[in-house]
Amino acid sequence: MAKRKSAENRKHEIVLAVLKQADKVGPDRLSATMIAREIGLSQPAIFRHFPGMKDLWLAVAAHIESVMKKKWDKALDPKKEPPEQLKKLVMTQLRFIQAVPAVPGILFSRELHAGNKGLRQAFFGIMGTLHSRITQIVREGQEIGHFTNNNSPEDSAFLIISFIQGLIVRWSISGKSFNLVEEGERLWGIQMKIFCEERGVS
Amino acid sequence: MAKRKSAENRKHEIVLAVLKQADKVGPDRLSATMIAREIGLSQPAIFRHFPGMKDLWLAVAAHIESVMKKKWDKALDPKKEPPEQLKKLVMTQLRFIQAVPAVPGILFSRELHAGNKGLRQAFFGIMGTLHSRITQIVREGQEIGHFTNNNSPEDSAFLIISFIQGLIVRWSISGKSFNLVEEGERLWGIQMKIFCEERGVS
DNA sequence: TAGATTAGTTATCACTAACTAACTTATTAG
DNA sequence: CTAATAAGTTAGTTAGTGATAACTAATCTA
Image (cartoon, rainbow over all chains, first blue to last red; front, side, top):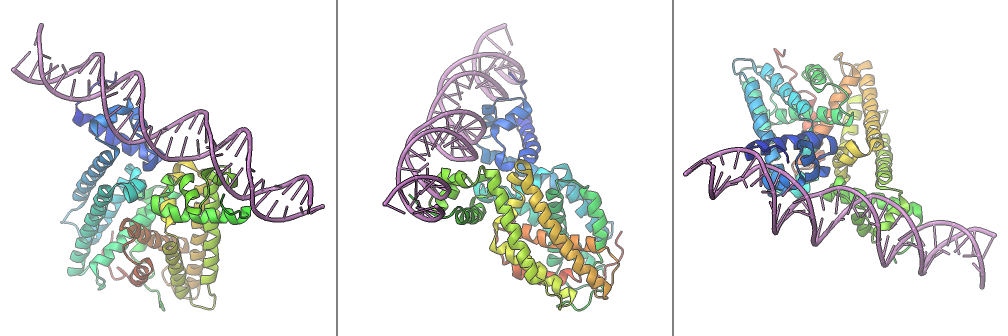
């Protein structure tokens, strides 16, 4: 018999085990048996804490949302200039993904896309929140003259999120073979000025 | 008994069925039974054409690679100016993904990430080829003075691929709720000048 | 300390996965 | 026309899935 823990602690432990194992075998191949083995419990013990796998995934999403929002809050410092705030937020996001590398896989899992509508809504909400935070910073930057282009802050935010997502995709496909944050820092500087003097685009 | 076809034709038919069904249920939940049902065969018929699922996925990757390369070749027109070539290549890629929407899912499948090393290498190779083609165009553009920044063409290409991938990720998570090519065209113009006049970046 | 509560267990169910063996029959080469 | 080839079949195996029922025992509270 495994040592007992309070339901609350055990639930948290299970969620962490899911994130750890989902990175190894993928969200859609992760079974209750694997999760249980990871923390030294029997398989039915998982279903004592969560009615079904769907609920377990929703708990995982809630955990990710909570941690991300905390990190974003921490990263934002209204005393700093918008460009620096922006960079900090982007790097925070990259650092988080590197620390919890299961997230991109969950974003593309079938659990999310086909199986579990609530899970997709949760992640859609998370992305929306990130988008609106970035939009806000860009808007402030424009107002005080940091970004003098007249693009909509919303579209600028989309491009910044693309920068993040695209980098993560490459990192993922490469087998996580480079440091996400370092590569992000390197390219961020370039992204901020690339093609500025380009001519003749159609 | 289903009507007979040559092994070659049947293999091709199976690959197309995989791409169709993978978009619906996801690569990791796609079973031989579903594929067989799609084309009106019995489940074991699949294993007559492919020794195992791994081999089937490799055939899918080979198909994707072949089609993509053809499209890239078609999109390139050395008579046109590099910026226009670039845009055309990017839009071609977006058009392809919209036509074969299973691809992003495969890119993040666990079949690719955990189960099937060859599959990951195949896609890594495809991305590498795209990267070098973009790099080449950027380099030419720099040489004849279209892109007057001094960023490495390789890094510029990474950023352009990020633009593509990031857009695809957003499209995917949104439930493919917008037109990928149209949104790509719209944002491409912005990407080409965003933050140009930004000051004070750290 | 006695008894309620509840985190854990084992055993099992119904189901689906990839895959195999053995058989059948359509197509085609000689 | 016949015989070989090979594309299909049915009927299984083995292994793993989520989930449930019934039981056990550690912990908490009165």
